[in-house]
Image (tube, rainbow, N blue to C red):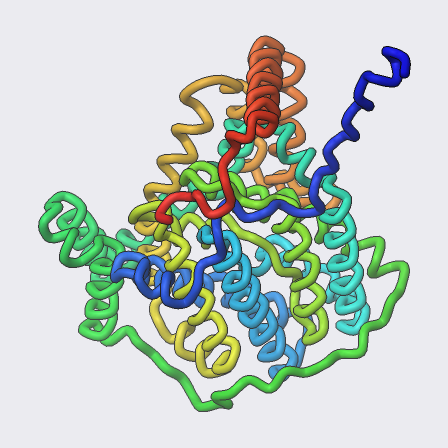
Length: 449
C-alpha cells in the first residue's frame, strides 16, 4: 500500500440542514406550565390586544373599501388568527423561544389599490402564489444567507423607524383623550419606578388594568348593534391571472420575508434569542397557504408582536408569553366576529397608549443597537428612508430603507464591513473547531434546562 493510499480521504463538506435545529429540547405542557407566570401571561395578553385592535381595524378598512362582503371579512379575520395561533404554538414549543406569528399589515395595505380593479378571486389566487413563493425561497436557504449578510445595526435602524410611531402614539393619545391615556401613563411610571409594586403587578399588566377602568369610568366603551358570535370560514375559489400574480405576488413575498420577518428576527435577536430564519420562512409559506384557503392575507413573523412578547421577564421563560398569545389567538379565531365588534368598541386612545407603552423598551433597544457601535451612517440612512414612507413599485419603505442603507454603508463604511467579515470568519472557525473536538453544545442545553 502506497503513502497515497494510506492518506485518509478528505471529509465530505458538511451539508447545511434544510431548517435550523432547536438548540434545546421542545417544551412539554408540564414544563410550560411551570415556566408560566403572571408577567408572561400579561405580555401574551397585551400582544393579543395589540393584534386584535389596530391591525384588525386596518384589515377591516381595506376589505370594506375593496367591496368584500361581511362573511368574507369574518373569514379573513378567522384565517389570520388561526394561522397566528397554530404557527406560534408549534414554533414556540419546538424551539422554546417566543416566536410570535401574525399577518402582514403592510401586505394588507398593499391590497387596497389592487382590490379596486382585481376581483377578490384573483387576489386570493395571488395569496396562494405568494405562499408557494415564500415556501420555495425558504427551502433554498437564500433568506438565511441574505439576512445574515445585513449588519444588525442597519436592520435595527429599520425597526426603530417602524416602532417610532408607537412612541409618538402615547403623546397623541394623551393629548387627544387624556381621561383614558394619562392614567395609563401614570400607572406605568409608578409601577416601573417602585420595584416592590412592579413585582406584585407587572407595569404593562397594571397599565392594561388601569386603562380598562378608565374606559369604563369615562363611559367610552361603545358596543354597537348585534352580529354573529362564532366564525364561519368561507372558501373563495382562487382565480390565477397574470395580472394579479405580477402585481401582488413578489411585493407580498418581499414584505413577508424581509420587512415583516426581518423585523421579528431583529427584535428577537436584540432580546437575546436565536430565531430560526429558514424555519420562519418555511412556516410563513405554509401558513400563508392556510390563510389563502379562507381568503386571508399572508402569514409572517412581526416585530411589534414579538417585542411585546419579550418585553420583560427571564429570557428562557418568555416562550410562555408566546404560548398565551397563541391560545388566545385560537380563541379569537373561533369567536372572530364577536371579537372584532368588542375591540372596535374601545376608544382609540386606549389601544394607542397601551401599545405604545408596551413597546417603549423595544424602541429603546432598537435605537441603542442601531446607533451605539458601528455602521452608524448606514443605520441613519436606513432610518431616514424608512420613516420617509418611500413606496417605490408598491414595496414598503422599510424594504427600501434596508436596501439603500446597506448600499450606502457598503460604499462609505468599508472598514466596518471588513471588521464584520473578520469577526464572522473567526466565529465560524471557532464553531468548526468546537464541533471537531466534540465540545459543541448538546441538544437541550439551552437556558432554563
